[in-house]
Length: 268
Image 1: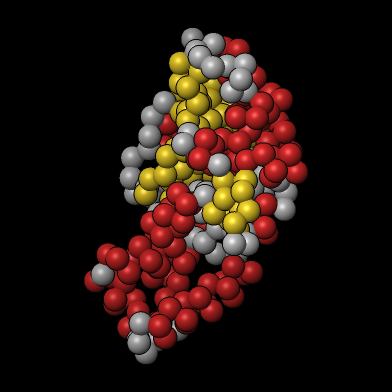
Image 2 (image 1 turned 120 degrees about the vertical axis):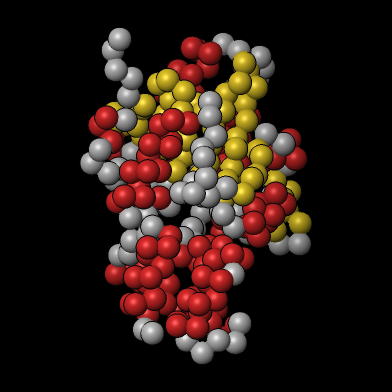
């Protein structure tokens, strides 16, 4: 079995799609994995994936690997700080403010959200309980995220004041302050195969579903996200991503350049 046939089989298994630049990197990673576990080629590996749920999970992490940094795409967080969070806090006044980071990888995105809240909102809104749910299918990445331990390369877009006030340098790594980490909960979750979490004010789903998933799977995920969000909740996707064409029945763009959408609520 060749690589192309293997991808066709796994596309149906995982509901994925591929762009040419992604395929080259995926092939190298798969060849390394096949050699690592002592198999002869893609045919044998496909059999193992079908028979071994643990290997199926491992393959899923290879196929949807994400690269993250703190404050990645700074303009998104600027809009969050100056428009979205002020609107939510003014409307809410008190209670829970919940954000879901889907495909959180090693935690840079959810921790950025927690840092933004702590530095710009926590003091003025003590009556609001802020929390971030951070999910991924890769348990190893989730454990790494919980450590809050990062190389400088993950922090190159982080404002210097935040770097100085909320990170401690130790053995060449930057350790995030526990006061920030406590507002983030990490949990294993497969957005494509499991039910969503309800009651979210904002959902970040960047550089995962709307990059890797097939159009059918994207529509399924978009419906789950809509059901998870509260009325007038917000969805943030990746800068180079687009929503499937059914999205106007579910979302309206409010900051198109930053790829930020609001849940569509028909007039009653």
